[in-house]
Image (cartoon, rainbow, N blue to C red; front, side):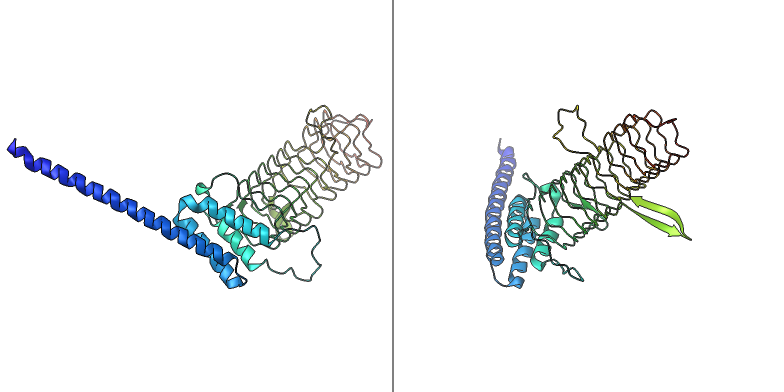
Length: 359
């Protein structure tokens, strides 16, 4: 019995030490929480300063807190998002025409940089809310790793002339957003919502819009592909992917879609669908679709006047009632295509396969 006393004493000493360590850790955690709270309050106070330098200090102080404390990241994200919405609200007024686009506001650029540099694995719902925010000219490019902004709410945000290359914007909300002149090269927008978005003159090279909703979007002057040429020969081509994207009511007039993956894309609403909301077909007048795979696509009633469709695969497509007047269909494959009521006035039909006589 006496021999076991030293062992018992050692066990009690170990237990006492563990209790002391646990208590010390708890006290340190309380002190740390108090320090973070003090830092947070100071940073929030700086955001309200009239001085840009002080506000920038507050923004980057919040970034430090976000990195130091995972539990505070959602709060920091909410504060910075609210700051951007409050200090840079988007307006419907078009920007003045200038020879050179001015840079984004320094504080708003800082907010976007901090949000882009966060650790997305610490995020919580709801998503980042930057709806109705003026983010014109923002520079936010992921190089080499993508910047993660999945599910971000940019509804009716102004992103005109912004640099948004190599961003992960999967399932983002961009309905009604202004992306005119923006660069989205290499970005992922799979499943994103861009209903009525303005994509005029935007660069979509190498971007992915797979299963995205692009209904009523404006693609006037949009760049879908870039080519590398050597001795006037194309040796490399990089294009956007629009597989299974919804493009009903979209303006694709004169759009250069040669090389774009349009597998399963929806250009016209199906009148038999219970989800038909009365939208019209995409406007594809004078669009460049030479060699594009449009197999089985539904284009009933579509406007394809003057479109370049040489060598296009339209086998099994529904072209009934479509307007192909003046279109170039040289060498196109219309095997099994529905062409009842289709207009072919002045269309080029040399070498068309699967169509003996237009009806």
